[in-house]
Length: 161
Image 1 (cartoon, rainbow, N blue to C red):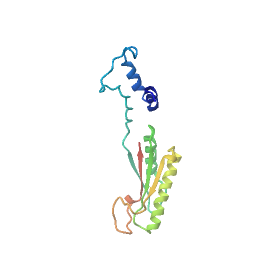
Image 2: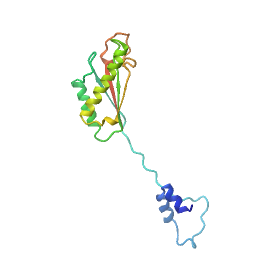
Image 3: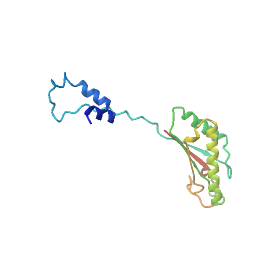
Image 4: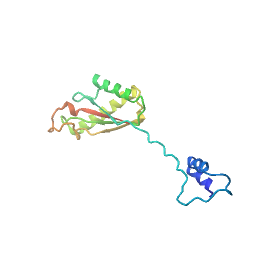
């Protein structure tokens, strides 16, 4: 494979242009360059600067999965923050330790699905929403079993850029 084909295959057209710009006259007139001299490398694409992830929390009433007024405010704030583009939205559902562990796991799943539905209704792309739920397994505040704790009844939202 000749040198031009290699440059084309590797997509280094910038390096080829730079190498050609440094050439003087015909190949017959050109002088051999020392082995250490290399053609200019193609400029690396500038890394796209991303914003740090944004975190939000939506809290729920005991035993409920409905998004309240405060939760809707969080949803609209998130929608506003997505205007510049985003990669994904991670939803993580939680419950307090009041009630049966199995029930709490299902409740945290239902909370996540409700938040996902609300986000979809206000314009968040549902294909970019990632969901997970832990029930009472990852509390914001550790408590004994059977304790009602408002801070543990939540969906954590992470907007990824």
